[in-house]
Length: 420
Image 1: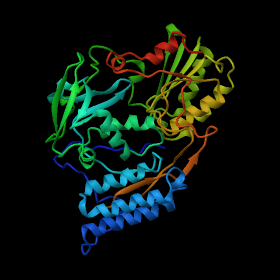
Image 2: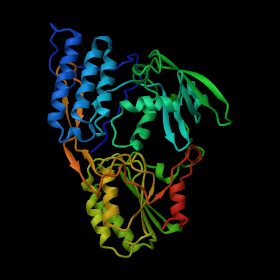
Image 3: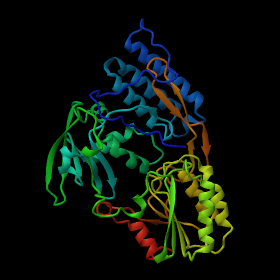
Image 4: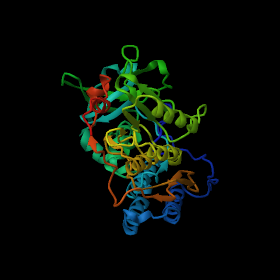
């Protein structure tokens, strides 16, 4: 499983990227009006989604769903295309299933915004806006950032509050979302207020780029030439990797995606990992799932079973699983399995998915617009009850200062022996 997130195309002069030429879409009938075509699409959506989803009304009632569809139907004559798409996203956000969403691409302002324990901070931007790098976002238009968050979260398909927080940074710099919600009055530019490290505040007008942003124009808040990034941020491009930390007798296993590396199948990789456990002096095994958005949960299962056979490592205080709000979908299933079948201690932040979740999604297209609608096809139950997240045994949330200074408070606390 993988997340169905708002995805972004390289910036272009097209402000609203609404695609009709999608795989599986039908030919638009030129004899029907735009309003009629959208209404046909909406009615098709409202009929097909309940029929295809295994249990669409587990969190929202059929009456509430139909009422939301009816309201959007009445609004269509007054809405632009992007507003209709956002309206459909708002309906899907009611469902409570983050895998049931819209396949849509919108352009964004040239900012990478991430939410930390202490707020939203700029972790990347272009040379033009170098002043806001590492700055804290405090206001969008006339709204303080938390009020803006309360508005945009109603457009985000989610299982829990932690996934809303993870996704919200992207939505807060997306003109189509901000304009549809009346947070900003136009697409081309928007007024934002940031807070510098000394506490002073300053306004910035962000503009949509007029051309494609080249890599040389992009600034990252972490300068690799000055300091090596912390272990958990290294090798992000590979699905899995490991490193033996000799000084602390720790085997660190970073599992970035539940998918096979093309040049290194997981089977041989896991066998080597287990061989290291058996032969090296290892006091602890750390499995880091912080940035794992999911995929195929079955890939890790044979490795988990092998861990259960090794009593020397399968003890409390010897296996640690690090999770965070980026831990999503199949990665949460794996974390729950490690918690259930081994003596692992979960450390970090609550996961971005519930441990019991809908997933394994498919897609259908609306007949006129071709807009893709993702929907879950299966339900996965890993723990008793219905907890909102897989909660860590020891909660540690990184701050912006940790991130910008290259610190990993989670790993530091584990290696210091402060978690048992």
